[in-house]
Each structure stands twice: as C-alpha cells, then as structure tokens.
Length: 189
Ligand code: GRF
Image 1 (cartoon, rainbow, N blue to C red):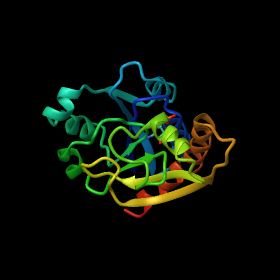
Image 2: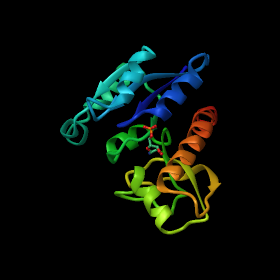
Image 3: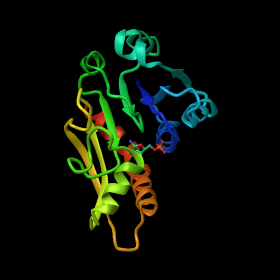
C-alpha cells in the first residue's frame, strides 16, 4: 500500500478529486491531509471522507523536523501538494526524494516562481493575452516551481476569456489529470 499525504491550504477541490479517485483503490490511499491554515475548507473535506488531518505552524515546519515524525506515524510514502503555498524545506525534500509532487496552474517555466499562485497567475496570463495556458505537474525541490516536469496539459484562450474563466478552465484540467498523474507517478516509482 502506498500512503499519500496531501498538503493544501485552500478550497481543496483538487484534494477532493484525488480522495475520490483513490477511495476504492487497493494499493494507493490518501491517508493524511496537512494544512497550514486552521480554517482551510480542505480540512472539512478530509473529515467528510474520514481522513486524518493535521494543522502545522510555520515555526515548527521550518525550525524543527517534527513533521517527519507525523509522516512516519501515518506511514506516509508519497506527498502531493495541491494548493500548498509554503516552500518545502530541504530536510523534507531530502527525506522524500522523488516522492513529492506539485500542481501549478500554468505552463511552467512560464508564470512560475515566488508570488505566482492562484489568481496572480491567471491575471498575468490574461494581461499578457496568451493564446493558451495550462497545468504543470512536477516533482518538488527546494526552489519554487523548478523540479522536473512530469506532465502538462494545455487549453486555448481567446479575447473573451477573463481571469475568472481562465481559472475555471484550469481547474477542469487539474481535476481531469491530477489524480491519474499521481497514480502513474506512484506506479512508476
Ligand atoms: C490549484 O489551482 C493549483 O494549481 C494551485 O492551487 C489551486 C488549488 O485549488 N497550486 P483547490 O484548493 O484544489 O481548489
């Protein structure tokens, strides 16, 4: 059994799709949801599906390695970032080498890096009048949005698109491809 921890700070629509996808899967399970925000809706989703949840704070995340104990207590083998805003510290990347992946709501290397998250990305894509955008699923290293790319999918844009319709198109692509890409990545470990 490969046990996944999802790190998320927000709405959790991707987390929900991932949980549903693996719900009746024999060899992969979502076993823990970790958030840096006590009030994040993703924690309610975890509870709805009877999955353990954990709220972490910045000081312990960056100045201790306590989270490794939590991850090992829940026998976590693989980490999925689904809307998690904090940079992953080196000790965590090193302990889960090749086993941490993230989804980014644009076609990296474009529109990546610090500060490029959520609507900031879609506003920038809109402003630049890009003819297309998309999603990038990639391995995580100690730098924002720089690990090796695993998968990308594109959608086209036109003059009628707004940052909001772009966000909607991106969420659809994410829900369609993220769970499958997690599955393929784990099966290829
Ligand atoms: C997604 O767009 C993802 O690409 C980004 O954060 C967003 C999370 O959305 N990293 P949700 O909380 O899964 O709805």
